[in-house]
Structure formats: structure tokens, C-alpha cells
Length: 360
Ligand code: NAD
Ligand code: ZN
Image 1 (cartoon, rainbow, N blue to C red):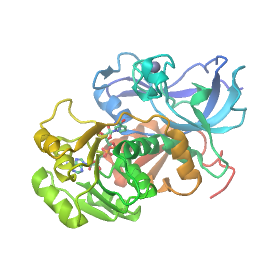
Image 2: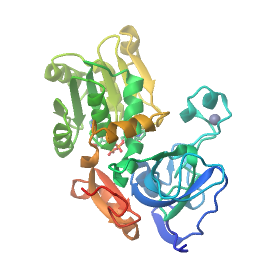
Image 3: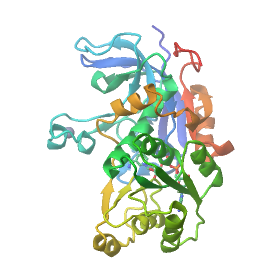
């Protein structure tokens, strides 16, 4: 086997380097994965530019990347679910399996979760990466490696819509038409929502949301007050939304989500904003609007894969830019500045489409 294990390593703020790392040895329950596609997430960019997200701080070199798919190159002696050559999507967080949260099934809340590219754990923008086989999902031949990588953000959308209780005939407000707002839109549609209004500050993002099936869009301006926009939301939708899903994390959008939601409805907060905010809690309590958090996903990868494999959800449109791993710096610059209307930037560790048996 080759010894080339070119890897994108974040050494500190604005200091990402491509360097050779040893190919990892695997243990009995792990597989070695020849990485194929790795999407850039806002959090990857945040670690590059700020060196931290909340209390997760980059204090030593960390391999970046966690939205990923690859091909199994080696299997551990106890691995039963995969064989060499399987094309897989990688669920990037491996919990402890022992704590109360893990035992109760809410493993996304495990305090000992080892999550790719969340300090101190390495990510997988690298040629060879090892992962616990339990958290690898075999892709059918017709699902591309890029779609496999996109199951990560899509799973956030699945979890958010489940937490919100989106269902048949739901009227849903989504704040923010970035990758997370757009996957949430796709999932809400597939769960039977009949009216979906999505907001953003950028018209181009709203145009894509419309293309993906949003029934209504609303362009916000930075100075808009939440109370005023709530009225506009009701006018445009013709109803008060049952669920509002904040995929921005700005104080103004979380405030809007609360004001706009119908009494007895649900607000879900996905966007990671400032650690403290001024919110209209009296308004929420007096109208019994439930406010729920979302942390990544939990048992959602299978549903995300089924949505893509069945054709129910088409996530391909989200990928606007492609780069080779050797062009990682340029890829991050594109994601960071949204160059050329970038939504999702995909990095190819192997030539694009080389591991897709069904050609498109
Ligand atoms: P993004 O920055 O690409 O998208 C955010 C969008 O919101 C942008 O299009 C922006 O123009 C828009 N926006 C900003 N302020 C606005 C406002 N006042 N009104 C309307 N729109 C506004 O980010 P993303 O990758 O789509 O992620 C969205 C958020 O979700 C981020 O905060 C990210 O950290 C968070 N996130 C949370 C989880 C979780 O587990 N809770 C997982 C993934 C991402
Ligand atoms: Zn645990």
C-alpha cells in the first residue's frame, strides 16, 4: 500500500498546513478508510479563523474535516458489517457507549463523544483515516460519494425537523438559507410540510431555496426588528407557522422565531450564536411556545441516507464548488468568503467520481 497520507492539519489561527501523517493502525472494531469526499462546514472555517468554538479550543495541531465519505481499505478482526471496497459515509461522532445518555439512546449528548475535528479529536480531511465500523454507513451504488459526505449536514436537518415535530400539513418557518437552513427545508418538505417560508439576508440564497421548493421566501435587512418581521411572515404565509427553526443563531432571528410561531407551537434553535441573548421569554411562556435545542443528530444517519437513496431528497444542488485536497487553502478561502455564491464546498481526496460505480 502507498505511504502517501497527505493530511490537512490546523496548527492554529490562520495556520492550516498540508503534511504527511502516518497511515493509522486499526483496532479490532475499526476500519481504515481511503477518504474520497470531505465537505467544508462553517465550523471548520470557524476553527481556522478563530481557533475555537465556545469551550472547544484548538490547543494542539488538529486534522480538519468531518463531512465525509470514503472506501473501506482494511477491516478490523471483529468488524462484521463492512468489507474491503465498501463505499461508506462516516458519522463523525463516536460516543462512549457507557454513560446514561448513551444507554438511553441520546448519544449526541454523551459528554465523552469523540467527534472529528472538534478539539482534541482529529478529523478526516486526509487520505487514510480510521473509524469505528459501527458509525460507518454503506452507500448503495447509485448514491455518490459527495452525497455520502452531505449526509452529515442532512442529518442535522433530520434531527431539527424531528425535534420540531414537523409533520403532514405543517407550516414551517426556517430562518437562514445557508447549508443548514437548506437541508432543513429539504427534510421539512419530505416530512409533509405544506408551507415553508425561509428567510435570509442574501437574495441569491433565497433563490436557491425557491429552486429547492420553498413555498415562500422573505429577504431580511440587517436593521429589521423581530416584531415587524413576524407580522410580515404571517402576511406572506397567510398563517402563523407551527414550527420555526432558527438556522442562523443571531439574536434577531431567535427573537423572530419566538414572535412568529403560533401559540402552542415549537421553536427549534440550530444556529450557534452568542452564548447569551435577550429573548422574549414572557411572550413564549404566555403563549406556550416550546423552545428546543438541537445538538448535531442522533440515530439520524439511516434516515438521511434513506431520503437520498430513495430520491425523496436531492442534496446535490447544495454543492457549488469542487477542489482537490492539494487545493485545500483555496477551498477554505472560497467557503469562508462565499466566493462565487458558494454554498457547500467539496474537497476531493480522490479524483471526482472515481468511486461512483453509477455514472451521472
Ligand atoms: P451559514 O453561515 O452558511 O448560514 C447562515 C445563513 O443565515 C446565511 O445565509 C446568512 O446570510 C443568514 N443570516 C444571517 N443573519 C441573518 C438574519 N438576521 N436574518 C436572516 N438570515 C440571516 O451557516 P450554516 O452552515 O448554514 O449553519 C447555520 C448555523 O447552524 C451556524 O450557526 C452553525 O454553527 C449552526 N450549526 C449548528 C449545528 C447544531 O448541532 N446545532 C450543526 C451544524 C451547524
Ligand atoms: Zn456516553
